[in-house]
Length: 130
Image (cartoon, rainbow, N blue to C red; front, side, top):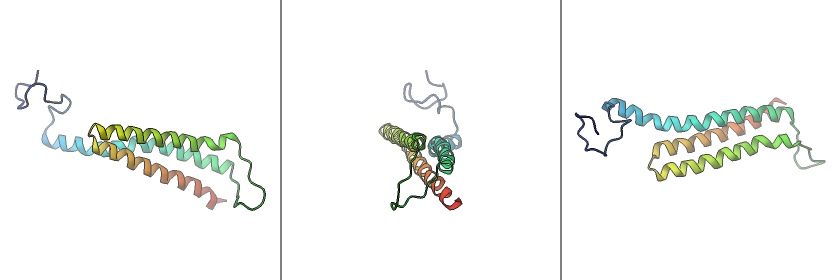
């Protein structure tokens, strides 16, 4: 049953947004994009920090001349974790696009791009440190 003062007919209102004022509704809509970015970027930042310390521990300069570097299996974990994050973020973003949550889905993709940039920076930073 809708609120007695609501102008929307029964079944047409979203209970979570029904009692919000116009300003609160605009704020609620604007936070969807930021929430999409932050949810992916938090995991991307954790993987980026892990990649930095992993690269710092197992750094080897190899340009294809001479003997190749021998990396342990743990070296590839951060790349695999980022690949899982990328695939799941893209799949969930597609799902959100089909639900017409454009802002949230775009935020997920932007968060993934920012996470990728952080991953590359954390890898390259060790090169400049050593």
